[in-house]
Image 1 (tube, rainbow, N blue to C red):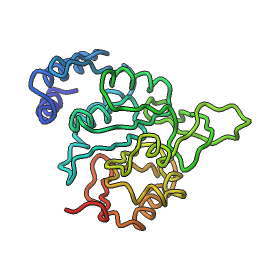
Image 2 (spheres, rainbow, N blue to C red; image 1 turned 90 degrees about the horizontal axis):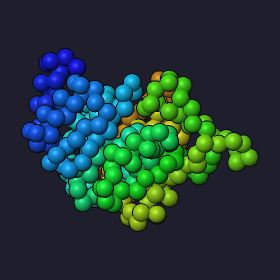
Image 3 (cartoon, rainbow, N blue to C red; image 1 turned 60 degrees about the vertical axis):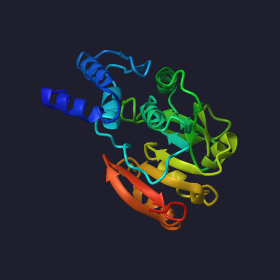
Image 4 (cartoon, rainbow, N blue to C red; image 1 turned 45 degrees about the vertical axis):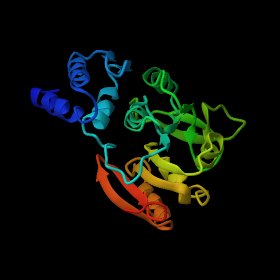
Length: 253
């Protein structure tokens, strides 16, 4: 980071955490530390070198892409494509009474999730992919990056890395009557998610935060928007490639 970027980061970070924690975070990132202690929050944040962890952390805590004034106080959250857990950490700090179901496909990222969210309550971790049905998948890394894994469906008889889960299954297992926030960053699998089998769960979601990946899977954005149009979702804003939709059948502005 340049000096100007550090100062900007510090200023933006102060909106989320206190002065001391902000200063420690900026200094630790500058020194490229793997472990960052946050005294007031009584916890540590873990960042891997030579990955996109720092970039992801900055996107969430510096650019504040999820730090919106929402028309509701979220109580139920699904974080699909959780990476190393920074979005869930942000949501839990901002909405401490929320219950979070977190979905991530890659085993090394899951290890980081467990470290970054250790000690926080009401968080359930799914080492699975989010899909439109229960299935079996190989995990692939076409871009050799820690935040760009994709899944390829295989038959039950083939070697597979993970199984998938569905929004319906997550809602049932966590007793979510509605989903206040569905955050989706699943590297192109959003096209499959919104292609079919969404008729039961989609009307029960209040806010969707989705990043589409047409560069990886063509017509992903079209497929997502086509499904949302059927259930009176309104595009509220965009930030860093993420689109924020409100379900106008469940939210009053």
